[in-house]
Structures are given as C-alpha cells and as structure tokens.
Image (cartoon, rainbow over all chains, first blue to last red; front, top):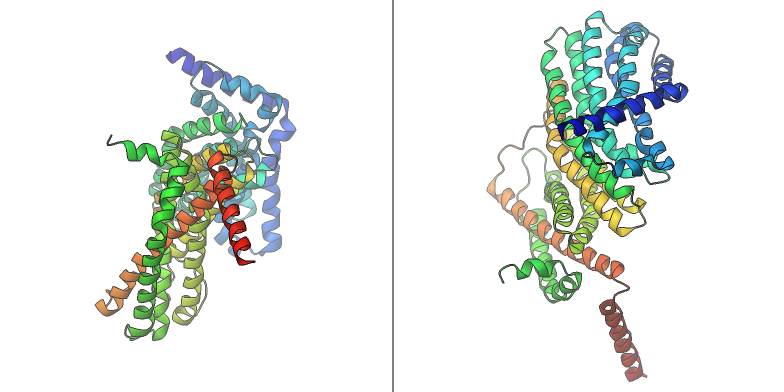
Length: 227
Length: 258
C-alpha cells in the first residue's frame, strides 16, 4: 500500500515535470511576468533607490503572488481538456497523493524559479543587502503555500469556461496571511530584527497547507470534473 | 424516534410548511425588539461625552458586524451538514445565508466609514478590524460567485460548501495574521482599541439591538430559504399543488368581487 501511495506521487510529479519541460515557453511565462512587472514599479512610483528600497520587499511579494495566481489556473486545465484528469480520478491510488505530485511539479516550475530570480529583482528595486537571504527563504516556503492553496481554487473552478477570474476571487483572500508573513520576514531582516519568527509561521502555514489542501482539492475535483 | 426531527429537517417540504406557521410570530418579535432597541438606543440612551450623538451609529454597526461574522459560520456549518448528511435543505440554507451575510458585512463596513469621518476625521483607515471585515466580504463574494458560476444546483451547492469549509479553517488564521500585521504597522495618531467599558445605559440598548439583529437574521434567512425551496422544488408535485391552490383562491376571490 505504501508503495502504491508513493508511486502515485512520483509518477504524476515526473509526468508534469516532463510536460512542463516540453512546453518550456508556457512554463516560463509566469517568470517573465514576474520580471516584467518589476519594470513597471520604478516607472509608476519613482526611480529613486531610497524610496524603492522601502517598498521593494512588499512589491516583490505582491508580484510573486500575482504570478502564482496567473499560473495556478493551468494546474488542472489542460488535464481536464484532454481527459487525463478523468484517468487520474479513476486511478487506484489515493487521490491526494497524485495531486500533491502535480502541485509539487507546479511549485518546481513556478515557485522555485520565481524564488531563484528574486535576487535579481532585489537588485533592480535596490533591496537592502540584509534582505536577500530572508527573501529567498520566505519566497521558497511562501510560494509553496500559494501553489497548495491555489490548487484548491483551481480544482473548484476547473470545469468553468471563465474560471480564471473566479479563481482569483476565491483564492486571493486565502493568500493574505502568506503575504503578511512573507513581507514581514524580509522587512524584519532589513530593519535588523530577528526574522526567524515570521519565517517559522510561514513554515507552519506550509505544514498545514501540505496536510489539508490536497484533501480539499481532491474532494473538489471529484465534484467539479464530473460536471 | 428521538431522531425523527433530524430526518424531517431533510425534507424541504416539511420546512416550508412548518416555517409558514411560526414565521409571522418570529417576524412580529423581530419588529418589536428592533423597534424598541432603536428607540431606546437612538432617543433615550444618553449622549456620549466625547463623540456626542455620532456614537449612536454603534446600535447598527456593532450588531451588523456580529452577524456578519456569525453568518459565515452559519453558512459554512450548513454547507458541512449538507456534505456530511446529504441534506438538500441545508444547501438551500447555505445558499441563502451568503447574500445576507455579504449584505451585513457591507453594512458594517459602510456604517463604520460613516462613523469614522466625525470620530477619526477619515472614512477609511487600514485598521486590523476594518481590513478583516473587508477580507470577510471578499470571502462571502467568492462563495456567492462560485454558486452562480455553476448551472447544476447540486455541483454549485457542494462546491460552495467546500469553499465555505476552506474559508472556515482560514478565517482564524486571516484574523490573527491581520491583527499581528496591524500591531506591527500601527500608526501612532489613531488610537482604536476596544471601546472603554460602556455605561450600562448605553450598553443595554445595544444588547437589545444585537438580539434584534439575530432575530432579523433568522427571519431573513428563513424567507430567503423558503423562496430558494420553491425555486429548486418547482417541478415537484407539492409546489405545483401549492401554486394551483393559490391560483384557485385568487380566481375565486375575483369571481366573488365581480
């Protein structure tokens, strides 16, 4: 039994990573979005580095949140269209495990690249040096929470034609704690405070999401994909 | 035997017929409590020493905020009951509770803004409680939008119930994190901690208003649920019979008048 649970996880993880590798252009678009929006901020706000530094942490976090929100819609969409989602629903494995595999693949292809690119944006928005390591840590944990929570919303809206807008409405309020503690981690570090407590809370949010979100997403998928 | 009432609850028809009997009494009680609370609060209660008459808006603002939050839990509980025991009626209650709760949240935000202008000199501040209420409004809107997005009433109900449950898990987390965020960024000029202990003369009418709002909520929820029952059960024989007898009675009345 344990073997079949794990195989469901790793098989779908491998499959989704392979699919993402074959459609590299599509997979790169959240990343391009993330980098491009950062050009808008100095244009819209100010090019002065002192003032940019004040808002850098929050801006990077908001952009990462929006980029994840844009990409999470596609988590189940193509599987629903080509019918492989129905194949997934009738597999003998417990449904949350394959879903966790898919969500992990999603994080590896969006959240992780966003995290790795964020220092570049930090330089562009003149983030103070103390903020880089906390930003990497908080984004790595936080984007995983965003992928997990977003999966529940994506599962609830998968069979709707205009699911994307609705998905943002459903998921946005649930993203707020992650945003609060993510920016707090970076700002604490910039202000010279101990930034581990907010990061620990992000970790707690992550642990809760790993435990609960695949279950909720599985329940939602069984319901909506039959529609 | 002892579980009979519970099984009866599964029948929308039973609910429709029995609620018709006691709804007038409940409405009457609501009107009496709300009117007496309003008169007591707006006319008889003493003026506030600092805020003058403008404080009287709390007699609307505070009960509305109470019910806005309680309404989310009522909605989510109804959805959970539907998911667990597969009760049609509780899904109808859930669907009806969403717009009522959203309206109350909006009223709480709106009256808060009106109250904020004379007291703090601004309609809007990013205070912890206001921000939480705004997020609560978004959560309500999400549940409503999801319900309207599906054509099949069954899928819409279950999807709404799942979202309601996810929201229930998240509300304490959101509230705590917004609270924490606010204490971190608290602006020094505006002090808005909990109201200093109220004088009993001001507090008693508030209590009456809270009870009145609970009653009002119950009446609104029952009325909304009754119309939802008729809408969803419109193809069943008992709703058709009901309509036919109503039509018959109307025709008889017109015949008698002419």
